[in-house]
Length: 174
Image (cartoon, rainbow, N blue to C red):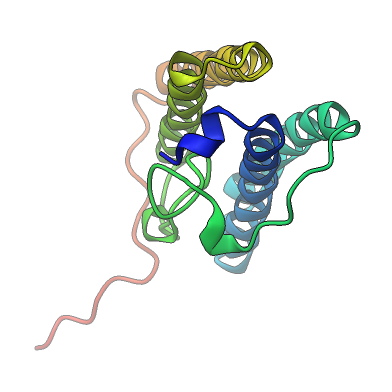
């Protein structure tokens, strides 16, 4: 992680805002993909989760309102991986995925975001960065817990349901 991220409040907040905005954008892309594949329930789930990311982005934006945030190019962000931690990988998206799989994916993303913020809070000596990073980590952990509870409820409800058929199986030569 870039040391400036844990010492420069405006840089940390720019990362936080980007993290939430990218999450919402990717979730909407996932929703559009699910609509394209006629998976309306999953599209609705991803849209709902994008709305929550929008709300968190608005909270972060309100904090940033008094800051002069740097305008960073995509490659200038210092993420633990290639993309922001709350952004789902395109490779994880499957048109035949079930809501349980989607919720599991979202739990991993929320946990990754919480871990990112917790790491910043643990490494920073700036009291404001520590305060915001710890708050954001706690909020992301709360989101993960809520999604975990929703997943557990869904699993109980669907424990006897057979898996969905593959509506486009690979061609098997004769």
